[in-house]
Length: 264
Image (cartoon, rainbow, N blue to C red; front, side, top):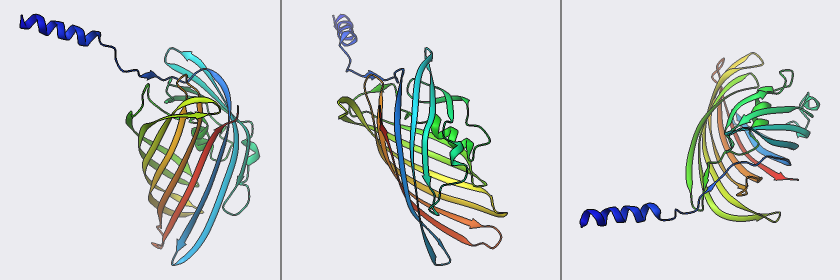
């Protein structure tokens, strides 16, 4: 009697409908995005403080195509780019970046497997450019439902201005609910991240090391049928640079914002 009742209960539970969970995957198609960023910061050495600002404006075209059952091919082309550096001038070689195309193999949820066509080595900071262009689509997870949360831990090595830099990233995501952008219903996903930064190398023949932290707070939007609609992020960074030759310490603080908007 009891055994049969138990089997019946298990059967009823097994047959009960599960809560709806969207199995998210980026959809094939071509879109253009405007990426704008700005940074305000300060550098302090021996009590002397120097303010700095920079900004950039980019247009990129992202083409998503099926490359296999669990693989997408994402082709990103830099349509236009304008940068104003900390000294109020565009960095040298910026014209070479326009027209650059990077092709990556990516999971259906945005995890980059490999970059098959990187930015040319002749470009300034080619490795960083390759990384940024292959990661325009934010990484999410397959099952998306209201209130869902998850954590993603990654590390990244990069070279910048003669320094080898390691970044350890712990990001937390939360599906905050629904939103509507350009008439399209989308999931609104909040993202926060803690980043630890370390590095060493030389600039102008001057050996140095650095360490610091970054706090990220942002929101991204994706539609249930796999379209990326945009992203907004704010970063507060604190970095200390130690000059090996004389033990001098340079303190750097930065506040930066980045926005990605779908143009078409």
